[in-house]
Image (cartoon, rainbow, N blue to C red; front, top):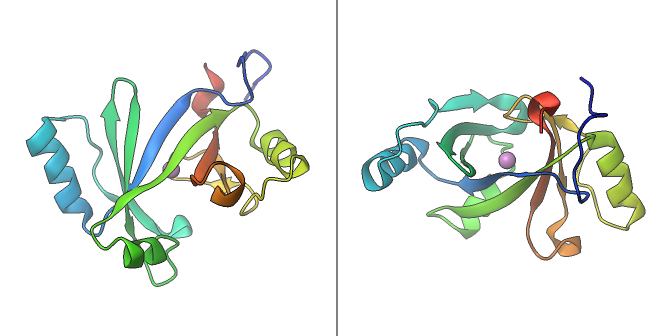
Length: 148
Ligand code: CO
């Protein structure tokens, strides 16, 4: 993919999604359908590498990424222990180059929680330690298709 043509004014590209952890993804999908009338919601799908089952609530300005724990090692199990009913878990911004972004963050003293790996959107992602970036878990994701 060629990212040379991407022109972001800032380090961060477009907002992509808010991640919302839920104990029961079927109920969450039903809520978005019945309460808000959203029709464009993907079928819940297990994604073992990230320890989640996810569904995307597609809205004009971005997505809500519903995530339910998958497996005993799911990274969101602890979050749901603290917030049994679920809640806002992370926000995701796009970047042009995940490796460059990851390196730039490390050089600024921001803790990058893992090596880049493929996320639910099929693009490489990293997560930044909330303690270094305004008390919010931030996901950086390489722009899908590089078309922005
Ligand atoms: Co996400």
